[in-house]
Length: 335
Ligand code: SAM
Ligand code: DTB
Ligand code: SF4
Image (cartoon, rainbow, N blue to C red; front, side, top):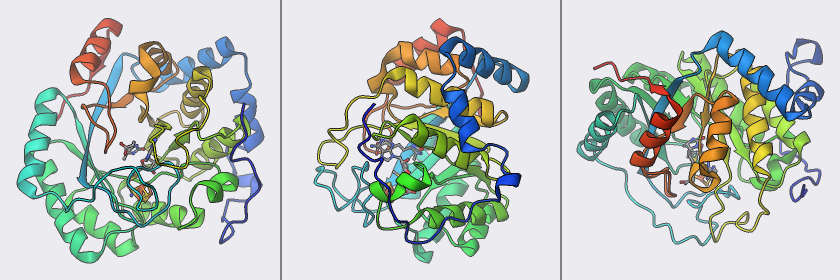
């Protein structure tokens, strides 16, 4: 296992974590789960999954980049950062008409959740007003609405709640001690603060991370423990496999053993039993067998549609075929 981002880092601000006695999942216990023999781990994950979910049920969430590229942040994995030469061009925000068309397409294809992403460090108040209108478009069509717009203030979170937003996605991305190796333009505590504002506004929290950025098992344990110890833990947990985009600092990261990815999904399921665990970025690269192992490990949601934000996702037809061959059923939109 490579240790490219294992060097100790100094965070800009100390991360406020709960006292050890309050932590449901000490990092060592999470690591012990990751270290289990694979059949034991899968059995435990499947047992927990079946206690809380129908194992044949799969949520389909469609992503749309409503404002692409030109982002001032320096996230080492991200093709949309101005700090990396990736050829992604910055666009203006999409119009409500164009977003409605995409929502109708997603609904017709069978998605029940629609997530809008914007390449911002944080929205300004004018941006937010426009996003509120876009949230109403999604709700008009009867889909669950999710956004990922960067950092939010408490007031902004309240406004999104008022517009009908169901979920806000903001990922912790990695373990606190590795964070500074991947992103320097904001810190871990900023992320926790945004999640706090989302929670206080009464919006469901969607937060996960990226696997395959050169971290060790201890790094993955640190990420999962942070998520699982949020009180309460997120309702929705996207587990992304790094998509290596040429021009980003992580483009040449060595491949991760696919079983390490499956293990991470299984441990997310065990430690956050009621959450939707979403098999997120990287499905196209990992192939069907690894995806099916992730379903067996407790993943019960996927991003569905030919594109993620700027990189590719499996075609809708390929996903329909995979779901049919595995006998999985999907959650339908309400209207
Ligand atoms: N700008 C907002 C933010 O960072 O919160 C929202 C969009 S950002 C692209 C959302 C998430 O996408 C990131 O937190 C990261 O987890 C994921 N992501 C971005 N690039 C990725 C990549 N190359 N591979 C895997 N996940 C990626
Ligand atoms: C999440 O956890 N993954 C999605 C969504 N939330 C916004 C984004 C994945 C991005 C993959 C690279 C790209 O297409 O930009
Ligand atoms: Fe910007 Fe989000 Fe990409 Fe970071 S992950 S560079 S904040 S779009």
